[in-house]
Image 1 (cartoon, one colour):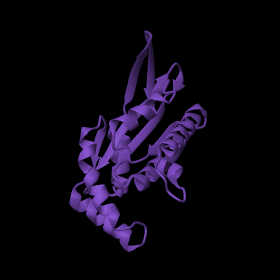
Image 2 (cartoon, helix red, strand yellow; image 1 turned 90 degrees about the vertical axis):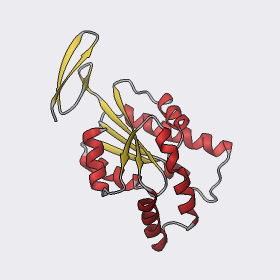
Image 3 (cartoon, one colour; image 1 turned 120 degrees about the vertical axis):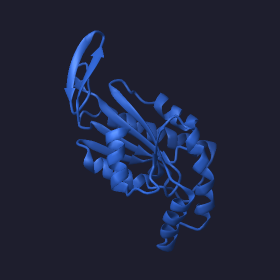
Image 4 (tube, one colour; image 1 turned 45 degrees about the vertical axis):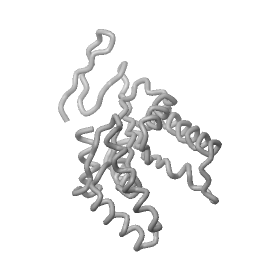
Length: 190
């Protein structure tokens, strides 16, 4: 990467391969959304492996319950758990890169998460993985064929595609990308 110059309160900091904030490395928070089956989890695992001092949280892990119930109470609990974990990752001096994925199909969800985080000294990368209907249908069909998803997911996921165009995020079209290519693109461009 190129050298970057950052001004903070009139102080010039020169940073190579990272950004500095008050003499400390600036942390990167990658918020990566996308419809079901677009490749968020796989791409984020790769990003975690490619970046130094990284941690990954999948928002779906906070919904892994039986029976699956979406109520006002469970929505609040999941949001609180996600933000609690992300804030603890931010506070931990070991981590420079925090990678988080979740469906995040509404701007209000992204805004609420960010509003609950202590982003001082952090750069927040807002990213949406998008793809065309054919590519998404093919990906979901593979998941269905191996028993990872049920057929109703195709309709639900396809219906959400247009929602991502409205979001204030960096759109990464993964229709013709492997997860490794998507991870590299995100690291270099978003």
